[in-house]
Image 1 (cartoon, helix red, strand yellow):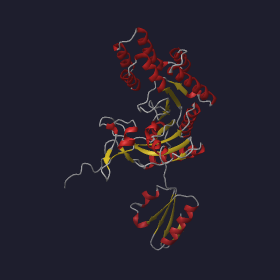
Image 2: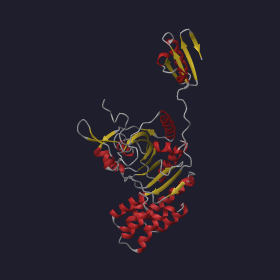
Image 3: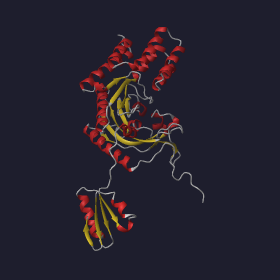
Image 4: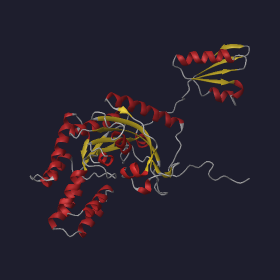
Length: 398
């Protein structure tokens, strides 16, 4: 007989979710749904497949990370790599006539192709929220505060948030080097946290000693505390009416509002924070907790994305990776999902079914099992807190 090498294997980056993990995912989903609705967010659902010419391009996910197909009519489609872009599509189409701002939430599976050596999931579940139509810093504070609330209610310990501003980064770098290609390379070095490479690259640039010193000081600000970072940004911003100065004012206002919301003690101001998604335009942030060294959640402002769908509109939002969050929180001890069992035979089937239905109506979890379908009775019984029998010549026993 020929062997089947893929019988027990899964495609690259995909994995099974076993019962205990799925139970924890369901717990988190219920917590998140309840809290998001309390904040006035309406849940939305989008198809797993989107047109490559719209969502594929606008998502800012690298082309080689997309799962691509042809639909029945030969149109290129992709498995959705993020949810922000599909929601932007809906806000610009089906919800175009709805009054702004929109508050939308979701829980969805996302798909991003991985290289064989990547070791990352190709499919993962994410819960998030988008606040569309509000350009004020109060909207940024709302989504930050909401994300922090969800993380804390999930059971994540030591929740902290890193906050940056990609608009400030872009404007400052361009003021220094006047070259978009160089700005992009400096951004990439920040994203990869390659400080040594950043310093080495600055040394190759044809800039003044003062500019090189400012660029190097910028990447070194990663190790400053919040007060030192604000002082450093004030020095960089100067007193002119440049975009850099305007972004600096935005940052100081956000920090003030976070203090009013009693979140300042959990915030780490990191102006070197740069996301991998290119559609972000303003504040960006990442949520941390537990003992993980990488973020379990992220988000930011993306004021230009909806313009790609012909509805220019400011927006901000976040997403929480459920797989990462589960790695960061302490999982509850495994327990039997099904608390009670009813074992019956043919003669007592009707009575057993009625009894099980009555118990379920009382809120109990009941497994209804015919005796002939049990492999080993003792092993089966050990799964449950109680077992009720409906067997011939044995009315109801426990």
